[in-house]
Amino acid sequence: LVGGHTGGRQLHVLFDVAEQFGDGEIHLTSRANLQIRGITAIAEDVIAAFERTGLLPSREHELARNILVSPQTGFGGGRVDLRLIAHQLDDLLLADLSLTDLPGRFLFVLDDGRGDLLDRRCDLGLVALDQTRVQLRIGDRWGAVVPLEQAAPAMITLARDFLARRGGGPTAAWHVRELPDMLTPDVAPHGDLPRSSAPLPYGSVVGGTHHEIPEGLLARASALALLDEPVLVVTPWRGIFVPDARE
Image (cartoon, rainbow, N blue to C red; front, top):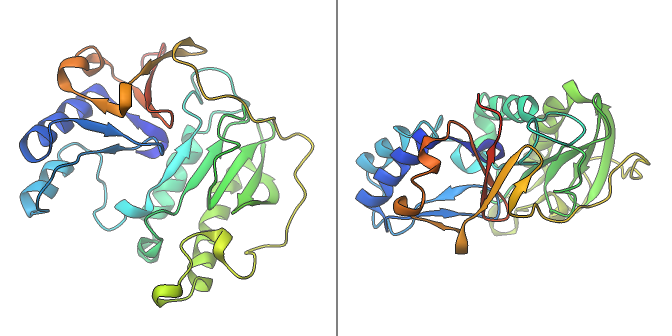
């Protein structure tokens, strides 16, 4: 899920897939993604069922589309709405077949300036300094300050550089921080960076409601109210944020 975004209709179809081919439940992950477990064989009919959810725009790029975003962005709080940037990043990933070689654990993390994802390790990412500028994250270090509209292309360029430098075989780097040399010179953290904030609490929060999903396991019987919601945002704290705004 790009930024954890999905909807009740997609969740409904995903339950159909889980009940037909898996263990019947939808599992939430710490990367704000959804998983179906218990599938015994990946056959064409299983993949086609996933494609009917609308959540699989490219079979080839599925492992590369790990884009974690501040869940409330665009709905309340934060310095800038990162939804457009997240989807721009995803579009650029999908447009480049070479990026299917990114390791399955490669992660982009986009913090909209509220600091909720500042403590998350990433391979590439950004933190908003204000409405027009972001500072890039490159592995465990800081990168350049760039205009917001240049952030997604800059991360794609860095992802290509990573692939060119990671090596091959069993010793190939899985993460940017494992490279022997940094992708770019180290940059000092900008003075306008936010402080790291606590995980999003459950209950009523700015912009909507954060629902706790015990143990990250979602069953259809307990998710009936969510199936009517047009916008759902899976959070990295194994919850689901339901915005107040209807889109």
